[in-house]
Image (cartoon, helix red, strand yellow):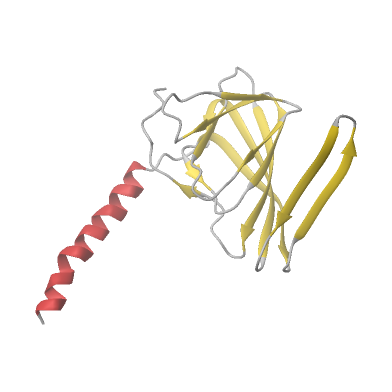
Length: 167
């Protein structure tokens, strides 16, 4: 019986932690998201590329275990719009198709802005990488993201503000 009562403070601590995590989450603002496509990829997904290029080789490799959900996501940002701090359970390939978008990483104590313009792309490794996209420009910005996620995983996870960027 004493054991059960000993678990009560632990359960309360977990509940408070979950509540605080939700309160500290940084929701999106000035951003709209449209899912352009979603498909189930049957295992194994194995994409390997290797091509000889002048001055050296080029390689790419994607290999998943288990079923995967593949998404194509269209994000539009008004000036000042942001995704809020968040993470994804898998990697994303992000293409900037209009305006400029700035990517900030939660683990960067200097809050270094990584600015990408229309016609450029970048990757989000997913997993424990927490980031925020922000339109610091004066016109709308748009990105298209291709995401590789574990089947039935939550596509986006809101994260607390790491307090490294002071906007």
